[in-house]
Image (cartoon, rainbow, N blue to C red):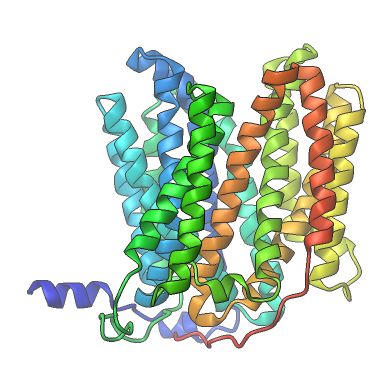
Length: 478
């Protein structure tokens, strides 16, 4: 078999077996497969954050060097989400999504065998390529693979899978590091990745009926200048944010990185207006409701991750044991997962997604306000975290449904990539802001200031939510 025939075979999406494709509930099997990728991504994030001290001891280096294990993944992931989404809309979302599982599993295997820190960092960068291939397509596969009336529920289940991975990550990581080895933190991804490939092969509908070729994809040109500008802008921004969370860079360097991010962003906007096939199509971003929807997605994950980082600091300052503090903090992602799946049943059925978004943002803001005003203790932290998680579980699935309904079917993967890019930037901000607040004003005062600011940002999200235009949805191919 020559190279052209092999490429054609690999890029031809296979339909599901007839028995599965013909079942009227088959779309829920596809949602379950997408949830596996969503769970894996957040599980990896939670586990990796916990393993950094063990890596420092093993490689006999300081935290500044070990931090690149997490930072390399985040930099590559955020830079590639939108470009991979654009590629997926051309090549086929099922093909790229399954390829993401394969790349992620192979890179995880290599990371577990890494004999040096920088080999591990390189494996994490490759792992992020696989993560981008999965994340850029996850929202699109759900939004375009289920009936319109089930979209919000399906996106809620996907968000619940993310919350479950986020909740289990630290505890599972602790068990693996304590009773096995830090290498198993990466090796555990391999069987999950292989299972994801098998499940996706049989359960995901194909998104292209024929193999992709440059001729089939139009003129075949790719916006390389846009990719380079986007990569530079996101990398500069994330490095600047990382100085607040421990990356040892002087203040002038952080300010220079922020300025560089602004300049590259302006260059990106100019390039995308001129490009024949832009990565971030200005027309797509300017679709009514999409831009504020992306802002709300960023805010939602900022509100989710700030308490996850700040909560253990506040509880430790009050003398709460580490194990108990970890259990308390787990209530936030657990409540988020439960609310994303079933929390909407407590609201009137006639409420629109706009109303659900506004209600969720308001409830989350109230929880954060309580967290800022109440004295720190197990009960006084647990209850506000439950309220905040419930509100975010209402907000994020409904907001994702609004955004994806407004995006044309042929751009759904790049649109899903933009949603996940906003989510990743919110995660980075949510990690950096608490560290900066504690560094500037101390744990108690700085923590409360950050929480009050978050409550105000939640109010901003209420104001940002807008109805979106409904677009035609392409039928599932098989």
